[in-house]
Amino acid sequence: MTMRWDVTLAIIAMGVVTYLCRAGGYAVLRAVQTPPFIDALLRNLPAPLFAAYVAIALSKQDLAAALASIPCAAAHAKWGNFGLSIVVGVAAMAALRWAGM
Amino acid sequence: MRIVFTSAGILRGVRRGVPLLLGIAPFGAVVGVISLGKGLSLAETLLMSALVFAGASQLLALELWTDPPDILAVALAAFVVNIRMVPIGAALSFWLDHLKGWRLWGSLFVTVDHSFALSVAENRAGGRDAGFLFGLGVFTWFGWLISTAVGHVMGSVVALPPDHPLFFAATASFVAILIALWRSPGQDLPPWILAAATAMAAQMLHLPAPLPLLAGAFAGAFLAAWRETRKARA
Image 1: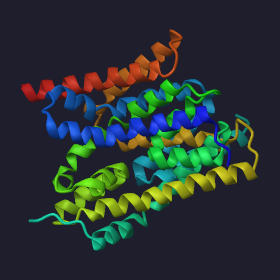
Image 2 (image 1 turned 180 degrees about the vertical axis):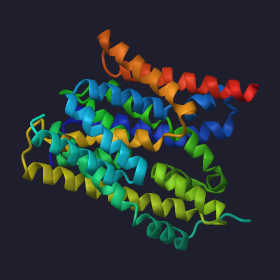
Image 3 (image 1 turned 60 degrees about the vertical axis):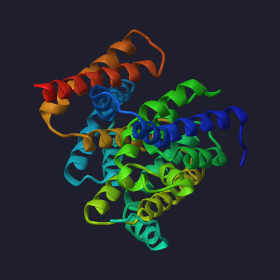
Image 4 (image 1 turned 90 degrees about the vertical axis):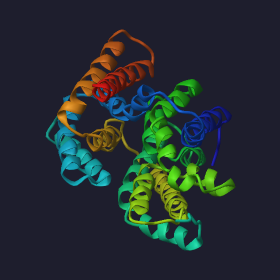
């Protein structure tokens, strides 16, 4: 159960930032009226973030990763269960690796 | 009607959280396995899960993880992913505005997308017990802690090569989250394509992480916000 000070510091920084998003956002948005554009920007941030992440992640991997993403996405569109979608994606990747990709 | 915070409400939230564990546990296990792969100890993994309690940002931070860790990069990653929680807190004001002290700030600490959505549904159905949000949040917090620990322990029992299919689980998680955020082609395709293209372009310019991600995310969000507010003005 070792803990390095630099890793601990990085985790605490993540925790503080995350709690500021959770609680600070509530506190600030209760106190002040933000412009509609900022509201819309915050509301619309998650999806482009994940679009950018998926693009970067796939660009760093081989063709098998792009192919395995398709059944993973289809499974989530069909059933909407995160656990199942991850299992389908990993199983597709395992099948592609087994097939020699 | 008066908003209350009772132990019955907390228990009701806990009971509602049980089926959610099916979705949370594999995701948590993946975070545990990946954190092991990045060299984090079990104690460090548990500390991250306990303090951050946000799977997507933990995965993203682990993706950017270096040795020694770049504190600014992982904090920025946590901020960018979790900024979506800013409006979530405000949207729960129907209950939170009636709470004080640990009930208010503790509820916010354990609020995640699942507990937010289910609390909104509970409120719409006439629920007036804010303990529901707290109970659901604390239960999923424990579930998250245990599942990341199990992933970390299992990962150390079975040594996996770097190209093992299990490591694709991180990318699969983000693909699934992206699909979950889908609304319609008209609303989503332009900002998503702009986000992906901007991120790729920034990466081709060899900008350091997480700048390509930030550039893509904010380019896409800016376009989506501009289209949304333009529509509202028209």
